[in-house]
Image 1 (cartoon, rainbow, N blue to C red):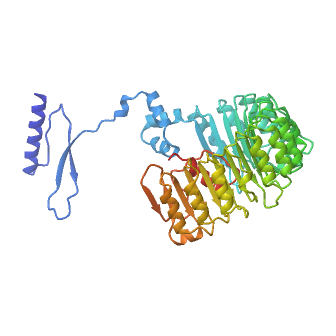
Image 2 (cartoon, rainbow, N blue to C red; image 1 turned 180 degrees about the vertical axis):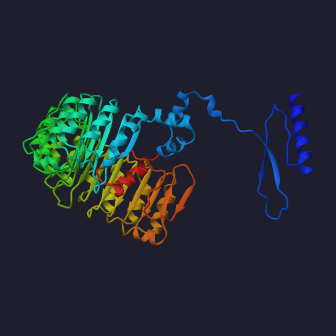
Image 3 (cartoon, rainbow, N blue to C red; image 1 turned 60 degrees about the vertical axis):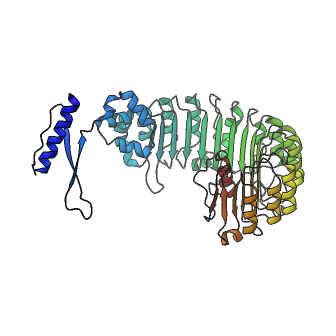
Length: 511
């Protein structure tokens, strides 16, 4: 009966419209709305249709369910959702765990209201422009007072925060697990207080702290000794962290980049549990590599980038002790101190090596490890067609291959097409002797392999080829831009626009 009455009501309403009536009657049991649509081009009359009254289905969700849904949204969409209604405004605030704020001086008066609204945040980032005055010790104290549950804090450009402010904050946030600071006003004493009062701290990143240079006799101690990752970059007096490095017995990852001083002696006290070590532009030589070999038997990832004091002797010493290496990145800066001798020692004594990146090194294929799965060679004057052909024959397990600015030609591409049965992805860039027909040949010969060729000749011919494994061939003339489906599996000290980093990110993407 209800369905028949509804149909009857609709028919009566249609008759009223046809008669030009302005009022529409409907049964109380069913709410009906008249909606007008703009007339189509060439039509002289308006079209009308019926829609039942919209129902907000989110009212059937509990607050907890709504918060879980909002947690899955990106920050931009969360901000838009918070403007829908008062309930969504409250739910978005209750479910937010990350808060990004511009840490200008005028933020301090608003911090109590902001942190009262977002009561459950565990991650906070405060960033200030170089040209602006930042929040001071009082602002940081408000953060500790209204958000004692913080687990992660990032400070950037907060030059008005001093050692005393950081010390007072550390007493209010004992649950802090990760601290990242750069270009701030505090120094060694404030960091020492953080390590002493925040016993759960496991990750510390320190960059560009100028006040360290003004405290030559200061030191940063290990505190509770639970630190698992330490990153030091662009510091003029990084030796103040020596007690921290030596006392952090649980340290697994250490990043040292662009630091002053001699690090050979400091590396002698390196923790024995270290599995990842990255060194870039620091004064370290063969003595430092020997110290790493003696202490870090479980080392799996090693980066030696732009450290010209390292030679084949140091690399050979490293191979004797660090036999669990899985990833090795070397940048020789064209000085010629690292070559086939050191790489041969690595290949013979490190059977678990899977990823090898060589930049600005003159090497031969005979020194490469046999079990490699990922290989990148950049700016090598000695790596030509003969070396590439030999590498293809030696590295039968090779899955990812990157070649940049090397004297290879179409002959080398033919060797790739005939070898490497496990190959999944290959990229050739800035190899001037590679031609468009050679790139097309490689694509046709290896249909199941992702092939990207970006050489001056190929680009001039409109050739930047990419084929997905198991899918139809894709032909594009895009130039050197990275594909949108790329996802990072490997991390590098080099920037995101670097060829090696971009290429291996592409290779890490699922086919």
